Image 1: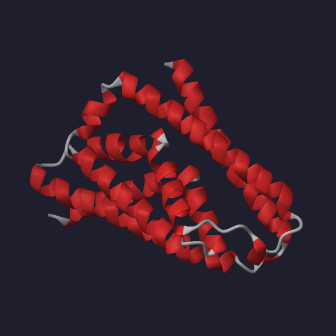
Image 2 (image 1 turned 90 degrees about the vertical axis):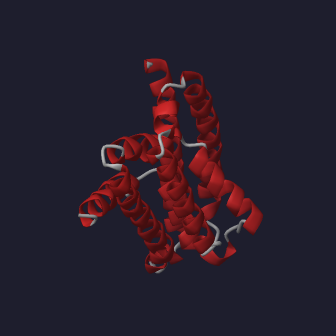
Length: 205
């Protein structure tokens, strides 16, 4: 039945995507500031759809055997995550005197670039979408593999839309400037935590 691979793709995709990480922290931040939040959510969902499709088409096998590509991607990800984390910590030091409406807003172009960077410069994204979902979905016959991928893509789309649009429910809490400082610190720690885990994985290899 087509519903079995679809539901497995939906559940597996949700389990991998709904986790505290650099991408989710970025989407939440954009949702709270109402700064091109729908654009950010859609870019993240479409990016996941592309990577899941590549994984199911066999690209995951290629990436898994390309050590040089993995190392370069890791260090690029570390550099970007460190920079974005530093940016968040600097923002936290200024948040005490800022109201939510006064927070710096990214233009559309800068938002698109930052979203693509936090997505494609994070090797964890490839691990979840291309390698893990690709390997799990690859067990299905070709006809059913499409429905597994559709389930995983649906999970991604629903999650990012919920995160981007649902962040507004937290706005009453973030009317206090100190709340923004706490969020910025958490985002910074998340970015640096992911970067540290990437560095550790390089030296452990």
